Length: 339
Ligand code: TRP
View (cartoon, protein in one colour):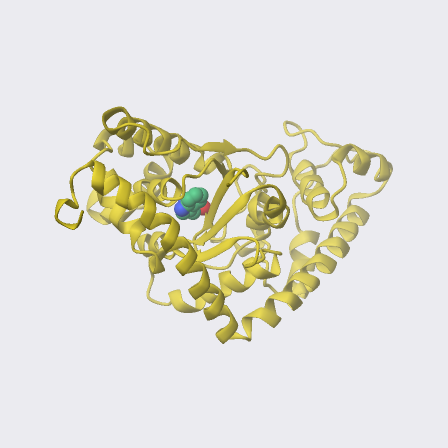
């Protein structure tokens, strides 16, 4: 009897993961394993929507897998798998696309933003970008997921998943479990270092805005030194998202890395100059990243182990998702001849 709630999460292997990805999601993954039945997926099919010529998907998938392990995801406790290894995702994707509406997909903020980047010209947009949230719904619904940890940017996609599931269930009975968002209270959105109004993002053109998990420690020193603070005199370190965006962002980063509450940090940092504050942040980030990178490299160099983890994960994921897909096919009379 399975009594733990099922948690599903995924990251796209489309480039180097950032400190923002870690703080916003992967930081929690290892402790989730003790509370939930966790399923962690590497969404390589989602990455096809933004392919570019210089990008090796194979390398990126293996990098991401090694990072999952370095972050404490344990293949003996959780299912870790690569999306394209489990064909059921694309199969359910088609069925769900027939329960999704053109209008609701057009309203997805992420799609609208991507469209804007391409000059609002729909000729420049592949249909995969449009369908992206349906594939994400398939990922989630195939595993009878109860919880999906989401940042602000994916909340709308989860809402859509619930709508699609509800529409299907309304016609065919309770086939899909409706997933709930698991929203982190703090640090779910790390902002960029030079422009703290926008989210830290791996695709930022200005790399000084972003700390990458696998980057050289020496380059991080300069990025933190240059991070935007403010000109309050005398300088004062406290959390205020309206008036002290830069400082608040740095406090959130420090709090996540040290596991200390922000109000405790505020007390400890009372009277400290901004330059010293930045030294403290750098010391903590570098200590943390050194440890993470060491563990990452250990996993990354053993490709046969990584492949074994992915294979074992795919077998477990197929078993679970096949059960649900069969129920969907069967209730829709799609597999009549195989019954
Ligand atoms: N779209 C997510 C992102 O870019 C990745 C993702 C794919 C995902 N499938 C998912 C996240 C299912 C949660 C659940 O971050």
